[in-house]
Length: 605
Image (cartoon, rainbow, N blue to C red; front, top):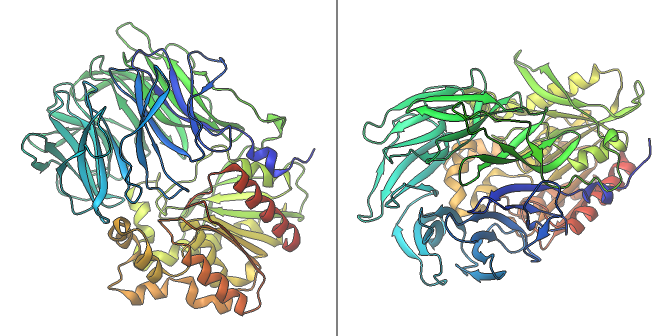
């Protein structure tokens, strides 16, 4: 099979985050064609997209006004995640700064129903607390009104139909959240969710404003679509996914159109239909090929929906589906890809598909994973990469990874486990690695290696640990706990020491992360799970990457692990980008990063 360099793989466009204009005629999306995510638009499938923004910094989101030919977008500096808000006037192409507080984070909260105002949260007043602000659409950076003071990590999820209330969410931990409704006239926020640990996503006010429709796992192991009555505080079920989570719920109040997804072992099912009663939905499954659908959004009249789709062999792109106008409101045809699919000369036939497997861990638990072999893998001669996701509550899903396809083209097999603690498999599964149980998830990685030993194609002496963020911690933990099974390790923005991580991470994140890992009040636990204290056990060569502007895992985590490993004489390579944060977002930096990783693996594996 022909070999292609990593720059070509990284040159494959990704188009995501679709949004309809208020007249429903145009679709915007975020696309990284220029090397940095920017806003593009088109008005029909297959039409040449037009770029609307040309900034050096990445765009994080775009949201059209419900009533005017304008939208708001977010942009940070150097990937520092301190988003500022901007308004783009589509009539003349001008951009207006709305916030201009580079030291603060701004979390978008949506347009008011009349499009005259918008809401957002920001930690301007206190670095660890997100207050609620409302600002006129044409207001300047000094015109925002603080309507509610918070003492934690707060988000605005939407406006009531009459524009007089806001739905708020406060997250104490990933699966410990509460919703409240803020009365904009009185400034009072009332908690509306029942007691008990739960997550609340995809929240939308009902047509009459007396209820919230949402995806939750309250009193359940998996997530379902529910209706939260704002007077009684009770949640009634509307639709559920059985043993799998529902997700991606969107709702149009006027047409009562609904679209939602079901996460089946990482793969997406989509359903479209209508809310026929307060707690009943009539929906049919959308004709969708095997892959992952995210970023679902509805057109202004509820007759079209758009979403981002990706599969092992298909890069991220935007699709649009039509809904019938008859009583059953069913999707009428297979959705159409609107954005171009350009693989820069790499045949799609060379992209390898993953197989869903399960392997047994130390306690008999079955761990789900995706397993992909390169073409013409030879028995006993194939190196393997164990690619560990971050989070830790995230889920690896079978979407397109250009770097994964590159490594497969280079002859590596790739195993992507969803170890205990991952989302997508029920609430109980996500808690199996909490605090004192942290190292049980690392044992799942050791069990993954044992599974690889049983695969006839794999060379047992050429297995690589590989992971980003929390996955970077897992790499460091794996090579210290089980040093004799790895040929090399590659980690990105990983946690080396949970004490220094919690001391230096963004103040707004500290309590949230302490709920998962343990708090600074229990330093004995943090030391017990921190790889930095077992550096003397590392035997394999190590590659470490970080962004200097990372607000989540400070770059000091990389500095200290590299220093300690070098002191021992173990080969270690460090790459720090001064203009990047938790993720490498600029294509030129990505090319440099993975060219160096390829050279590192060529040398050591």
